[in-house]
Length: 107
Image (cartoon, rainbow, N blue to C red; front, side, top):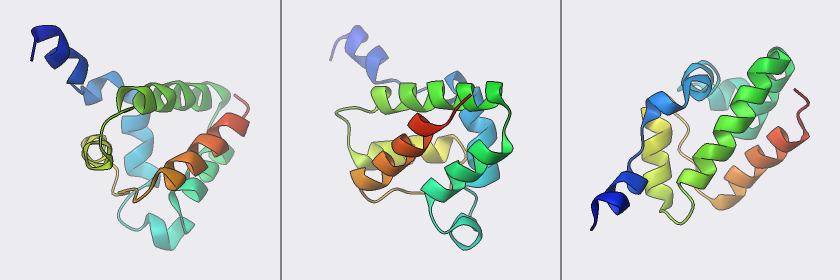
């Protein structure tokens, strides 16, 4: 593996400050009881947050999804854990539900 390939596979949680703030607050260990699903937790964030916060989360979520495109679900789960989330998505459908919530959110 070249240095460039290693660099492109490197995940730096510090590059996602809005997600580092949001994920532990909404996708904590009891999020399933509180919200029922990750998509509903994201919907609660959209309801609670300011326009700038929503925009930052949307941009960082999109960047995160791109960063993990072509990588395994296990790698994404690890990345989410590093960002402070207790949520461990089990399918692409769960991720797409979050994508949909955020795509409809107005910043």
